[in-house]
Length: 119
Length: 302
Image (cartoon, rainbow over all chains, first blue to last red; front, side, top):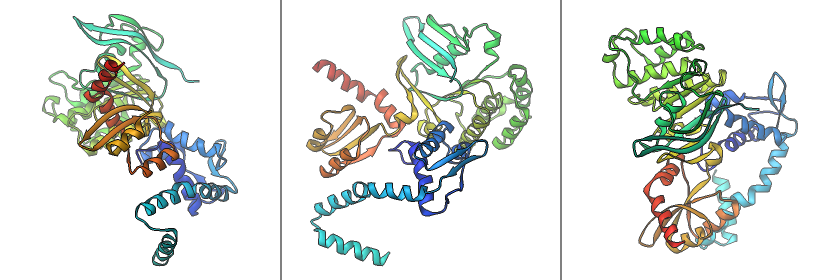
């Protein structure tokens, strides 16, 4: 767990990543609040807050007495949202560092292409 | 709707001219895990002793399960207090402690206690006097967990417990709490180890409550900004500073309040390093001398 951000957000993001990467499919069941709490060694109230965030965002839904399930269309919505944040979270720091080092946009594009080939 | 288990108003305890607990107000809600944190001599144990009816307050109101705790058997029956260095009768073995425990705790789970004895590898038939420091702490931890008391206090429960045993304690505490919710107050110096277990924090210093907030609100609420002195100072100019260090042209300032994306971009542009502040570091800042020096400076300036 990363110290700088609330744990419940990190729990929600972990589930979101599993959905985006496909290891958790739409209609699939996510772990219970207590399973999250004991596995991650966090307070159950914190885990509940993370799960509730996913419910509020329409990513998972509660089926009374059974558990929490990933909603239909959750993956597409998550990707949409992550794309919207991509520039601020990833490109902006990249550009700041590139400018510091005197790398212009053309050179940066070249580096990105080269990195893509090698990875 | 959660129920209030403890309500303290103006709670005060004096020993002669020394005020150990100075007119504190707080409440404990049902089925939450609290961290009661602070330095040695801050007043943590005194607060817990008043809550469990072991000592009387000099002033203020105190209600535990709706009544004064001292001399009310129906309240005391619902409490479990695990002291830092619990003493037992000389001839006692751990097996005697476990046999006597159900007389005091109506929710006692003997099966659970047995499993914990195995987990902690506690020798049951050896005189308690002959147990190691860690084994002695294990006796208390087992009693505290298996009592399932509606209000359980652990006051520095694990002196001498090794890292493995401490993690067994955290794991068993969480799983059992999830299955049998109750109010738990954990007082400890090992703040970073327990930080994620806590739902609510009470930080006490010199007999006063410095902070009474949900752990999630506190997490990530402070950041250390490090870099060139001028850049750091311009970045923190209109923020609440809770700690300040520096050598030569370098400064490291801890600020209260969350940073947004724009702040992070600005810090990066100024070439500043941002580091999260752990709960333990935050408490060091809040209860340490650097803060006090700062606030005195501010008072003088004001």
